[in-house]
Image (cartoon, rainbow, N blue to C red):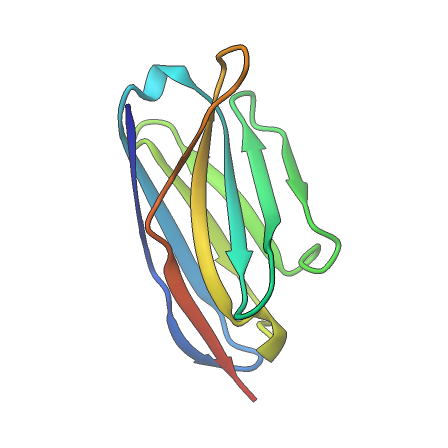
Length: 118
């Protein structure tokens, strides 16, 4: 079992910044990659950014150049630094941990609300 706890969401004006954190605990040795997803009201949950165990990162086109995902292995924490925020970034942001099992399994956090006002 892996437990994930997100924090750092809130209300920010357009152009502002927020940093989300996702603290992992439990069977963290089984984690291969960590992801940030977001889901706006009435829309599907979309992948925002990913970081693998070797540090490789990947971003959705909509956030490239504005968001940065990073991980602190000593703290078992993944971060999402969000800069130049836009109203369309408003969503509930979820952290997930993908295991290295075959097939892989995804654990999810409870989500944190990010609201960007115009």
